[in-house]
Length: 188
Ligand SMILES: Cc1cc2nc3c(=O)[nH]c(=O)nc-3n(C[C@H](O)[C@H](O)[C@H](O)COP(=O)(O)O)c2cc1C
Image (cartoon, rainbow, N blue to C red; front, side, top):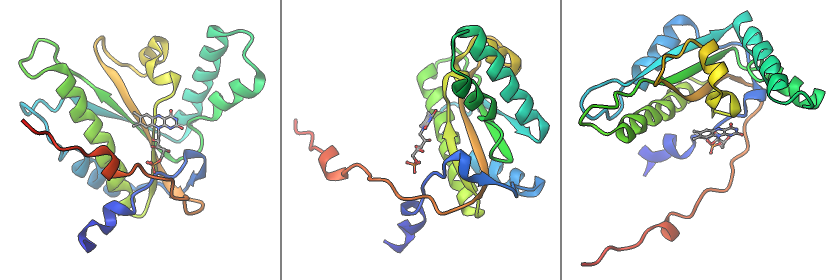
């Protein structure tokens, strides 16, 4: 059971608690190498990554703020400011982009699931290297204007913004589902 300890201790660290230092180039490469080691039906690798660091984080935040006001001119200054700062906490945000092939014999659902596994593997790899991480989406992930600003092609989707950095404090554990309550026996 000791082998499960690492998995048992996995938890997200809220992005607002993530600061410098972020991963250096070798650590980022190592994390990505683990993240792409996921089940992938048809070996399609139907995903890619965008790194958002430094001033690019603030520039994206400004675009979110502008877009938020465009969508709702009555948005409160506090809500707009939250959007402005969304990407300003963690030193690195990796956008995991799904690039599914709709006509392929491997259903799109499986291609997206594989991308979800990439996001989760990134969380694990970040924690294994001593970083904290959180997988977030929020409205921006689904907003066509923001997707265009990120340079996504038609048919591509944001599966997650994975925020990575050094935790300012240990994240509290949250209550987990009871696996026994989720398990039932199929009987013919
Ligand atoms: C696809 C996906 C999107 C998520 N988006 C958000 C989000 O926008 N905001 C948020 O507070 N949590 C979001 N979460 C939840 C966090 O990633 C995380 O699960 C939560 O902070 C609890 O931490 P844990 O990983 O230790 O369970 C999302 C989770 C998933 C799987």
